[in-house]
Image 1 (tube, rainbow, N blue to C red):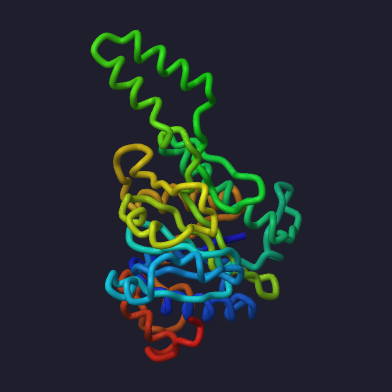
Image 2 (image 1 turned 30 degrees about the horizontal axis):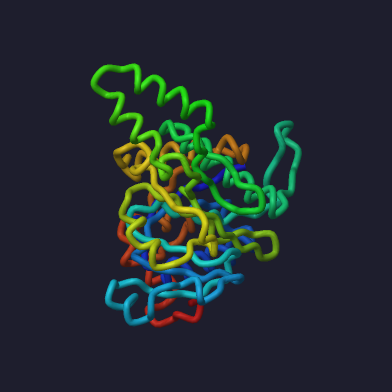
Length: 292
């Protein structure tokens, strides 16, 4: 089985929705292979099918002043934010098209599909030295706080090191450094066995500036984080995309094929270079916004 990867750059949310629907329709007709779109969005707050409007804490006027759009969509989940500094992935997969380790045809259920997305992201975070985990009853990927014994050992080591003990011990007692935080959100939609929507991984600290505008995923008791916040620097999105897709291949037991343009993917002239996202509007028409 093959997963074709198309990297789009920065795309506004309405255009991304139209593109997904175009590809979903083609996948249902078996006219394209499984596709993973990788992109960034311009700032947008999205409300899934189970969202409560009260979880958007900012007024419409304030969002407009900040340049943040607001969309309702058909993915699962509550409220989340997409924007620059996130790597967003939209798998357009036919869940009936996969195989097991023995090469036998295997249909993925919705829960297994989401668990595989989580597993892919968990492996990616580990590439950057960030231990992450699932949280029972919740969807997404969360940083794993150190155990109490690890914190005590860290404090003992800091206190026994001349010149750094007080500073390190004080940092290790910072409750934020030890609490669980969400680093990647997942929300999917499945229609006749074909998936859309997907995941958003916080790479830089820029997205974190917007999360106070919402109750992320409707969970008020947990914070959000990013790769940059966890390791002190932000890897290039292209580097993350390369590592991520390698994990997709292993987790979904598929061959990864990078496709330079949507033209190449569709095998017809669409006039949409993958690296020029502003031209994506040609796919469905500039004024067609009924997906929002």
